[in-house]
Structure formats: structure tokens, C-alpha cells
Image (tube, rainbow, N blue to C red):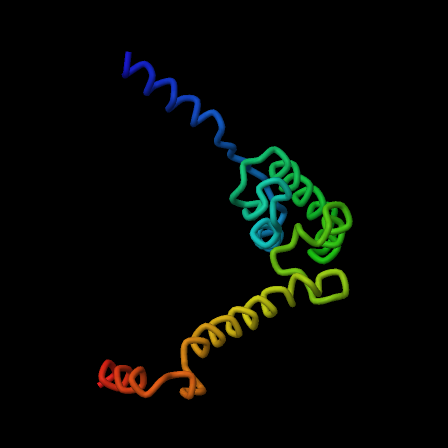
Length: 146
């Protein structure tokens, strides 16, 4: 029974793997294709490029890129086409412009905020004004610190 279950699981996993073979006119077109599917993101998988995704939409986009390359479109034209259709999200490295400014500034803001919080935590525990302590408390504090 276990052997049958293992066989079913193995066969079902293999049926999901998709191997696409496209033939290109030149090695340069093949290199362009590989570069594009590596630098463009799968809209469904969110954090996976097109070359690493087996989602149906990623398969469609890989075919679309192949078709556009065969129609002699440039890499920039293909990227512009996909950005127009899926938005700047489809790019792993979006350009800095008015639409993507938040993507670039939010990490910087969070870094500065984190530094400020750490600074405040470190300085909050120190006594600036020791006049709040009585003489006995000052003496006990000095004994503890030495």
C-alpha cells in the first residue's frame, strides 16, 4: 500500500513539471529570451521570476515573450508591452519615477525609523539628571557599578 501511495505521489509530481522548448533563429535571440524571463516577475507567484515559475500565466508569458522576439521586437518593447498589461510589478527592478517612488523610499524610511528607535531605546535607559536619586541611592548605584 505504501509503495503504491509513493508511486502515485511521484507520478503526480512529475506531471506538473513543464518543459518548454523553443527554437530560436539565433543564439542572440535565445540569450534575449533567457534574460527577459529572468528579469521579469510572474504576476501570480509574486516573488518568482518567469523562468522559475510553473504557473499557467508564467507559461503564457514565456510563450508571449518568445512570440514577440520572433516578431523582431526589442527587449524594451517587450518590457513596455508587459508593463502596460500587468503594471510595474512585473519588473524586478522598477525604474525610479512618480509611480514607483514609494517603492524606493519606503525601505529608506523604515531603515531611518529603525535607527531612530534603536537610538531612543539605548538612550532611554541612561540617567541624565541624577538629582532624582537620594544620596543612599547614589551610593548603592556607585557600589553596583564598581
